[in-house]
Length: 300
Ligand SMILES: [Zn+2]
Image (cartoon, rainbow, N blue to C red; front, side, top):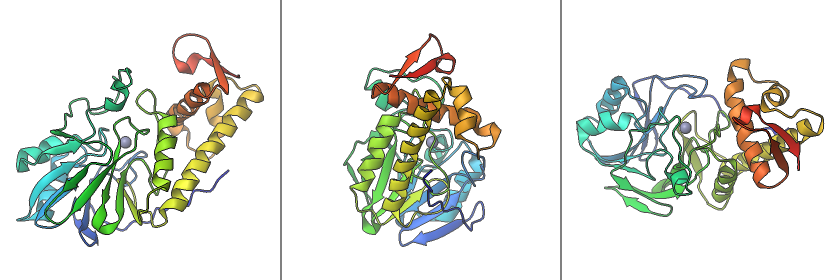
């Protein structure tokens, strides 16, 4: 198996702002979990008239902490990487206090709806961006410039934001230092995710700032390890099937030996995403009706 060069050390305290680099500050929300690590890191770009990336969960204390950090400064833009419940619901609270408009790829499921697939489960279904942005769009603020980088996969509407002044990429949940990303169909899509990882290899960002956990200071090595890890998972699935394990629920304990059992349902979603990709590539075929967890998978 590939070793991903994880970075997990992070010194911070909830409710206080940290200056991370010129023009980059962060306040971490108090919503730690096995999925959010210490919690949602909300980034503040620029000074005076600032952009806020991912206001986080529906948590008034967190929004107050952001506003306290800003004092007399104004929020001119709210940027949203994607519409999971730990990222976008805080927009409504922050917008109520600042009037700043939101910028995002689209509502939850937007990327799948474009392909004719309706996504109804999970996500912040109430979020409607004020401004739709697409890949390559440039958003200019008072003393910052952001390029939008469309990176579907974790969700179909996932964006990374590049702060051009710092060659820094805010990677949301696309690439994280502390963990791999969960790809959960139907909105999550492994083929799209792999394409979005390869897209980052072609860029020259110097540092990544994920929503959860510390920065990634060797971006390309990290992304390549992420890619290799997913290819390892594909090989493991093919091996499972070859050795007579045909259902996802039976593959998970074999593939995730180091993962605590309460994470198995999430792991099963990622296995499903990988299998969907293998079916699409005609390396695996599915048998049976109904939910994917009841299907049997065979080598094609
Ligand atoms: Zn997410």
